[in-house]
Amino acid sequence: MNTTPSHSTHDAQEDMRNQDILIYVNGEIVPRDQARVSVYDSGFMLGDGMWEGMRLYNGKWAFFDEHMDRLFNSCKAVSLDIGMDRAGILDALTKTAAANNMTTDVHCRLMITRGVKVKPFQHPALSQSGPTIVIIMEHSKPAESLHKAGIRLATVPQVRGLPMSQDAKFNSHSKLNCVIACLQAEQAGADEGLMLDPHGFVNTTNACNFFIVRGGAVWTSTGDYCMNGVTRQKVIDLCRANDIPVFEKNYSLYEAYGADEAFLTGTFGAQTPVAEIDGKKIGVLDGAGPMTQRLQKLYKQLISDHIAS
Ligand SMILES: Cc1ncc(COP(=O)(O)O)c(C=O)c1O
Image (cartoon, rainbow, N blue to C red):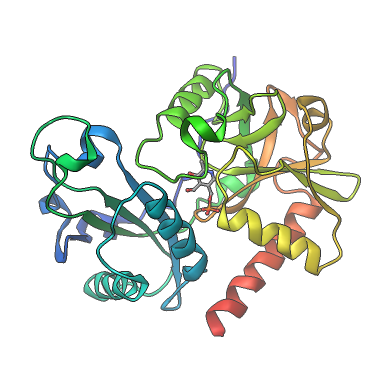
C-alpha cells in the first residue's frame, strides 16, 4: 500500500491571512464570505467562462501581457465580451491588490463568465446583463515539500481531446475533462493524472504542462492537445536562450518511464519535480534532478529580471 501522503501541484504554505481576503466581484471589493455570484450565472450553470491564474511579485504581475493574450484570444473565440480592455483589467487587479495590502507572493484567479442568464438554459443569448468578473487573490507560496519529494503521476484513461471538440487551449471554467483525469489519478493512488493525446502520445497533466529530460535534452509534447501554458513557453524559451536542447515532439510512455528527470510547469508552482509515473521512479533523486534545478534557477532569474524591468 502506498503510504506517502498525497499532495498536489497547487499545495501552498498555510497562510491564515487568506481567511480574511477581499474579493473583487463586478467592481465591488467585498469580504470573502460576502463574495457571491448568482445561481443563474453562466459560469455556475455551464462552465461558460474563461480564467487566468497569475502571480504578483514586488508589485508587478508576472507575464501580464502573455496572460492577457491568452485570455482575450479565448474570449474572442467564444464571443465573450469582457467589457473592458487590458488596462481595465490591470486597474481591477491593482485595486484588489491594494485593498488586500498585497504586493508579493500573491496568486490570483481572474475569472470572467458570460454573466447572469435570464433563464436556466444553455443558449448564450440568455446572458443579457454583461459578464461576471471575479478576482480572488491569495497570499501564496508553493509548499516546499513538493520540491523535496516530487509529484506522483498516474497515466489515466481520460485523454486530451481534438481541438474540434473542446480545444485544450481554452482555459475555460469547465474543467470537467481535467477533473475526471484528476479523480482517476487519485483512485490509482497518485497525486495528478498524466494525460495522453488521442494517438496515445504523452501530452500533459490535468493541471500542468509536462516535460521530461533525456540525455541532457528537454522534451515536451508538440503542444497540439495541451494548454498553451505561459510557463511552458518560458521554459522552452529559456532552454533555447541557454543552449539546452529542447524538443516539442511526440513521445510515448516508453520514453517517459525511462526519463532521467521529469517536471511539471504552471504559474502556481513554476517547475515541480515528478518523483514517479505509474509507480516507476523517475531519475535517481527524490526531488528535482540537475536539469530541473537548472531550469528552476533560470526561471527565478527570468522572473526577477522581468519584475525589475
Ligand atoms: C490544464 C492546464 N495545463 C497547464 C496549465 C499551466 O499554464 P500556465 O503556465 O499558463 O499557468 C494550466 C493553468 O491554468 C492548466 O489549467
